[in-house]
Structure formats: C-alpha cells, structure tokens
Amino acid sequence: MEDLISIIVAVYNAKWYLEKCVNSLINQTYRNLEIILVDDGSTDNSGEICDDFQKKDERIKVIHKENGGHADARNAGIKASKGNYIFFVDNDDYIDSDLIECLYKRAKQCNAEIVACGYIKETYYSNKIEYAKENYIADSEEMIRRMLQYDDVSLALWDKLYKRELFEDIELPKDIVYDEVSSLYRLFDRAKIIAHIDKAGYHYVQRAGSILHKKFNKEKLCIIDLSEKILEFVTKKYPKIICEAESFLIINLNKAIIECYKNKFKKEYKQFKNKSKEYISRTLKNPKIKLKTKLKNILITYFGFARVFK
Image 1 (cartoon, one colour):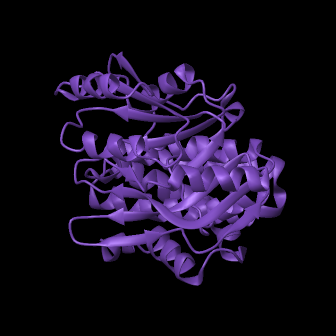
Image 2 (spheres, rainbow, N blue to C red):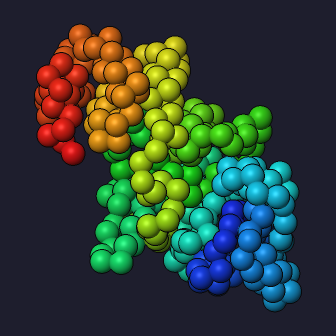
C-alpha cells in the first residue's frame, strides 16, 4: 500500500488565493494524502473557506488556532499529522498536479529521506525557474554544502518531501524570520540520503506583502546570528565545508551592512562592520568566496562604500 503523505498549509488571511492553493492539492495524481489546513487566527474569512473545503474532501483536516505565526502553525500541523511523509505548501502558492507523485517515486527509488525539487518564481511581470538544473543524490555534508553555496537547492522548506521521523525533537523556531533556514540544515544533517529532481513543480508566488518581501527591518538581521550558528555547527561536524559556511556568512554580512546603512540603523551598522573586520583574514584566504564578494566586503567595511551599493 502507498504511504500516507501529509501536506501542511499554514493559513493566514489568504482568502484571495487559498482556493487555488488547496485545489492544487486536492487534484494531485497521488491520492493517499491528508491535507492539513492550519488557520492561524485569520481575521478574514480564510477559516470559513478551510471549513468549506473540509466538507468537500474527507482527506482535509482543519485546525483553528490563535495567531502564533507561520512556524507555529506549521508546528501544529506536524503535531497533528499522521503521514509517513510531510510536505509544506504556503497558502499563496500552488503545485503541479503530479508533483507529490514525482517526489514520492523518487524517494522510494533512492530510499531517500528528503527529496527536493525546483520551483517557478511567479511575479506580476514574469515567471522564472529556480533550482531545477539536475537530478542527483547526496549525503548530509554534500547537501549542506549545496545549501550554503545556493547550488541547485533552495533554502526553503516548502519544495521538499520529508520522512516524518526527521522532525522528531525538531520544532520550527517561532521567533525568527528565517525559521526555514534554521530548520533546513538540521533536517539535512539528520538525513542519510537526500535526492533532488530537475522538475520545477512548485509555484512560488511572490506578493509585495509577504514576510520576506516587506521593507527591510531589524528582524531580518537575525540572519547574521543564524549564519554564525551554522558556521559553528559546520566547524564541529563537517570541517571539510567550513569555507562554504564562511562564504554564506560573509555574503549575509555584506547585505546586512548595506541595509543598515540604507535604513540608518547606526548601532547595527557599526556592529556588523566590526564583525566583518574580525573575519577579514579568513575572508581573504577563503577560496570559496568570490573575488567580487571579497572586494565588496573590503569596500563597505573599511572605506564606507555601503552607499555605492544602495
């Protein structure tokens, strides 16, 4: 018998696009699904839309809860799920009708605990395929390396199928913007076999009001602490890819310094420039950091050129 797969959708004020999202799940060619819609305290009629869907399809389960944020809603969905595999979909996105079937077949074929795919980034103006270059199989170290180098795998949770046991004792962090990045490297670490398919079957719809595309704010600066945490983790467990972890940190430091300058976060601007200076010798020696990134780092750290990169 085919495995039960749990699809978890965190729902918040999504009345304009929720129907398209859920219909793409109901119409999957892979039928043995439970679709968990977690209404995270919506103030529009999203909760009622979820209830209507539940009446139409017995595979749909609805959870209504107080607003706790995206990660908290996903955690509630994971806790309620019964499937052998877990897949996440954001409430304003949708997926191809055969995506779950393709990911599941690849998982069984390779005995993989995680299977990733590419996605189509959809904006008002264009569609662009991302992270769908090749089929490959990797171990934990290789997949973390690819993640840190943006090498044909995204930093998102939603374009991957997971064995549910990977989430034992892992709770998505509720208080940071980059909860997906914080969780993904730990999930890769737990998986012995990770596969990737060259299919872009997830439709990532970018809206102006989504969390990661709002105007830059101080909450996003947590990426520096997270990058250093990943570097510490890699140093202890995967020393062969320290250079990749340092590169990830320096890229994010460059972005943070520029954004702090643009937004007049004077305290943080000074703080991150000082931190960048602490890493400068390692930055210059690191063969995984591109020359362009090194030059940018020197210019914004020592010569105040952050204004040039506005």
